[in-house]
Length: 184
Image 1 (cartoon, rainbow, N blue to C red):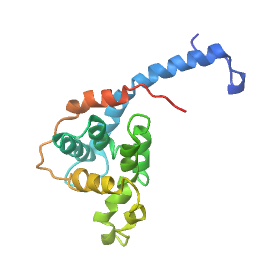
Image 2: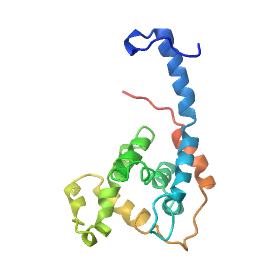
Image 3: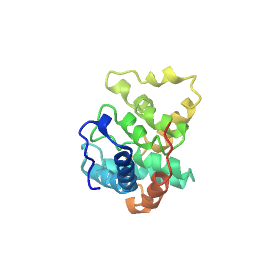
Image 4: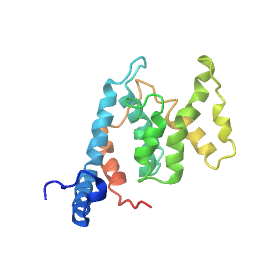
């Protein structure tokens, strides 16, 4: 079978859905390569900083790696801003959604809310509330998100910081996104 015959999902057969499942499995196997490609695109993302968004991401991941964080954490640091190009107003949620099936709930939550937590460092300069993150003050992972932003985000704009290359992180990306995922 090269294609299914149905034009309405309700008309599909078990054989066609089995075929589509196999196609999806093959497609998902290419996810790590597509993620690396998307990260490469951050090299030419919006300007104004002393470094590119890719360099920022590499710096974040390198710092996490140097601190001996888990592979999941390092990959999350690498991907935390991957949504910048397509979801500039909700990049955190996009990055978290990409990571969600492959990382712990804690890492997912940190990435999902890092944009809001990051506002602590700049919102007051732009007429915003730098303490917006305090709405989560009682959350079990509040301190973890504060720590992520302090150690692996707000300080990762240094053009003199020696980062690992994207190629260095590729095996970690393949490890995290190579996990078998079970959906409810």
